[in-house]
Length: 163
Image 1 (cartoon, rainbow, N blue to C red):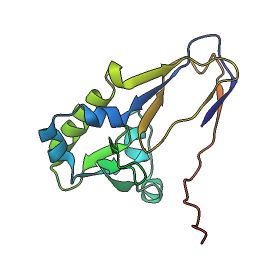
Image 2 (image 1 turned 30 degrees about the vertical axis):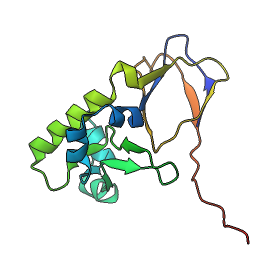
Image 3 (image 1 turned 180 degrees about the horizontal axis):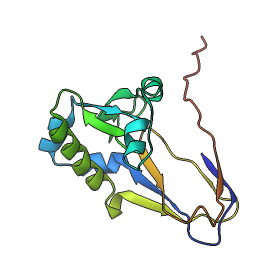
């Protein structure tokens, strides 16, 4: 969830990509190829692409995690792509081939028909499903303009069944 607290006078939007719709739009052959694959996600890798530097201790502490490339919502059974800028490689694939596949999937998932661009207004409150959505802020001059959004993340824990 994001709550708008302070907004700049310039556009500072957030884009949300529907990873379920992106999955549904893939050809059945591509879906079959992706079904058993996993990707390594690393915040250090994605930030290094932007010029940030990490020492060995920071890299070890922020080692990342391996996630299936396609996830199924346990409640709905709906499948969705599981990728974002932190996805650094495909497990078990040559590095170059895996990164090409990730780039292809990112380009596919961020096509206009899968993306909602939220233009923030004072007091807006946005909720999204992390199992089915990828999001990013759009570029704006954050040195000259202040934007403050408050984020809350909840954990979906099933309640015990009462007899």
